[in-house]
Length: 216
Image (tube, rainbow, N blue to C red; front, top):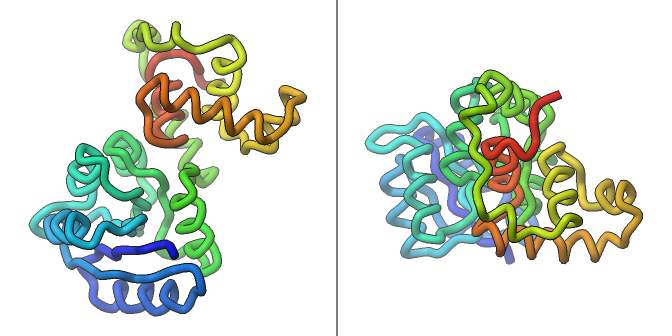
C-alpha cells in the first residue's frame, strides 16, 4: 500500500483528494495537514510514502516543508499548486520535490502521479520541463561548475544521465542506447548512488546545474 499524507490549507481540497485516493486499492491516506509545519510533524509521526504538498500555506509554505522533509530523508513529495509559475517549479525541485502537478489536472493524472512518485520516478509535466530548461538557459555557463562527482560516472552512465535530463523515459533511453530496459534501471540506480541523489527529479536538476546538459 502507498501511504499518503495530504497537506493543503483548504479543507475541501484535502477531503476531495483524500476521498479520491482512498478509493484506490493500492493507496491509504494516513493523514492530512493544513500547513507546512503540521505536514513536517505528521510526516515524522505517520511516515507516509508520498506527501501531496500545496505550495501556498500559512505558518510554513510547501517549499520550506519540502526542504525540511528532504533533509531528513523523508517521504517523496508531490507538489500540488494552482500556480504554474517558473519560480515555484524550480524552487520546488531544488527543495527536493519528486514531482509537480497542477490542481486542475484530471483525477486519473493525480492517481497516476502518486504511483509514479511512490515508485521513485520523477514526474515532470512537459510545461514544467520547459520552464526548468528555460531557468537554466538564462544562466551563464560559467556559473555551472562541473563537480568532481561526475568523474565517478562511466561513459554509459553519463549518457543515461544526459537522457534523463532530456526527459526520456526508461523505455526511450533503452531504445536510444539499444539496451534492455532493466539495464537502464541498473544504470540509473548506480547514477543516483554515486551522485548522492534521491530520484530522477534531482538528477535532472543536477545535470542542468552542472552544465552536463545545456538547453537546446
